[in-house]
Amino acid sequence: MVAFRVLCVLLSALMLLNAQQGNGALTARSQKMIAKVNEDGPYLGLVIPNLYEMNPLLESSNYTATNTIDVAGRRFRFGTIGEKKVILVMTGLSLINAGITTQLLLSLFNVEGVVHYGIAGNANPSLNIGDVTIPQYWAHGALWSWQRYGLGPDDELPLESAGDYTRKIGYLKFANYTVNVTEGSPYDNLLNNVWYQPEEVFPVDGTPEERQHAFWVAVDPYYYEISKQLEDLVLEGCINSTTCLTTTPKVTRVQRGTSASIYLDNAAYRSFIYNKFNVSPVDMESASVALICLQQRKPFIAIRALSDLAGGGSADSNEADTFTSLAATNSVTVVLKFIELLAVNSESSTGYAYY
Ligand SMILES: *[C@@H]1O[C@H](CO)[C@@H](O)[C@H](O)[C@H]1NC(C)=O
Ligand SMILES: *[C@@H]1O[C@H](CO)[C@@H](O)[C@H](O)[C@H]1NC(C)=O
Ligand SMILES: *[C@@H]1O[C@H](CO)[C@@H](O)[C@H](O)[C@H]1NC(C)=O
Ligand SMILES: *[C@@H]1O[C@H](CO)[C@@H](O)[C@H](O)[C@H]1NC(C)=O
Image 1 (cartoon, rainbow, N blue to C red):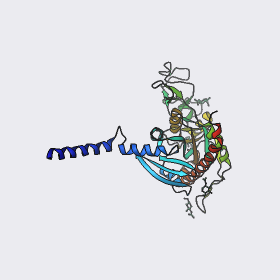
Image 2 (image 1 turned 30 degrees about the vertical axis):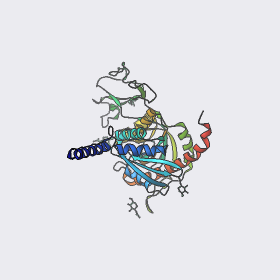
Image 3 (image 1 turned 135 degrees about the vertical axis):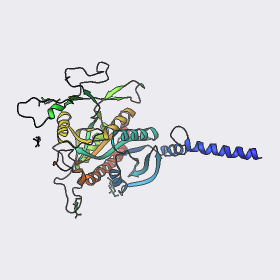
């Protein structure tokens, strides 16, 4: 009898352990919750860098929260925006966090597409703080081959012949940013050149371990098409009764944006990437979301409100301090409208799903 009781205690302890651990990193409880929410899908995934960008959406009367599931240090928030079922998730700063979180979202949940939004720096001199940009292409701008001093554009990069690196995308030459040289005197820079590189990608419909390369990643053509209708949207131009933007903010579709795990507050680099790549928003997450969605073959779009000039403003201040909340609010306004358009359009375009 005692032995039987001991056995029962042991068994229930084992079951408890099992319920907590499940397989891999997922608890059995999480697995159950995930299976259950997935039956109610598909969801539109909203991937958001920081709390100050997520909070205006959480506080919006257009968002209704249902439940949350915490996995791997991330909180997946379920709810609805109009007719659309959505999952909100905050990534945390920068490319690694954004990549991990987007992959978790797509691996765990029944997701029809991803809308990424937040604030950004602005590299495009014809745009203004408060404007909301929707680029057609994104790239990770800080995967580099750093060339040794003494070599130049005619010299092959290490491992270039193996196809690991390339000189096709272009380079930054540090010596070009030398200042305070006496007229006529020679100058150079030991930091030499950095060459931009594409990412290695492993698409879900490719062969595992067989790499492909991607630098500019296009947003979903259909999402981009309907985002044109956002360009009429009226945005907030003031943070309070006395402090307003000097221009009327607008929504604008642009050609390109770049991301890197670098907070850009440098006028020379801002101007270089604008002239070289025609980028408008510069941020620290969008390219990760783009690269994950590209590989998982999920439609995505990124909506970024400009909160500062990435170093192009006045010398002693970064405007992000003043206009972050206004930009975050404007990005949420645009995202809400985009989701409304998506709900309307997907109903009317279901008939074209076969083309
Ligand atoms: C460096 O500056 C020279 C002179 O302005 C320019 O022709 C060249 O394209 C620049 N090189 C790079 C890599 O930016
Ligand atoms: C160096 O050059 C910068 C940019 O042209 C200028 O603002 C600065 O005053 C110069 N500094 C010195 C010590 O000459
Ligand atoms: C408006 O915001 C600015 C910048 O944050 C601040 O300096 C100013 O005191 C605010 N004015 C009012 C009336 O709240
Ligand atoms: C938000 O809700 C209001 C009030 O129900 C509605 O008029 C508006 O169209 C909604 N906006 C969006 C972008 O969904």
